[in-house]
Image (cartoon, rainbow, N blue to C red):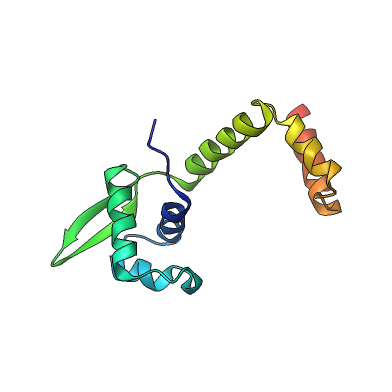
Length: 122
């Protein structure tokens, strides 16, 4: 199993999932400016992701090009599973019940869930 990716590292991955390979400067230019990250912060996060084998890098002259080694869908699946395991004992039904009790599901989302359930049954 891959080492856990932090929230900050996930922001870097989000940039690379949209477009890659990218240089560190390309990543800096695409990270939301409200993060206020310096060049060194982004390079540190990229280095951590390389160490965790979530990102590969290859030399391109005097710079490196970075690309993700894990698929976004795999990352989302793992994070979703951890959340459900941690907060709801590994069961999905209590999560949906929690959202429903808090009126966190709008009519469109309810329709989407109903359609998913119909597909699962069919």
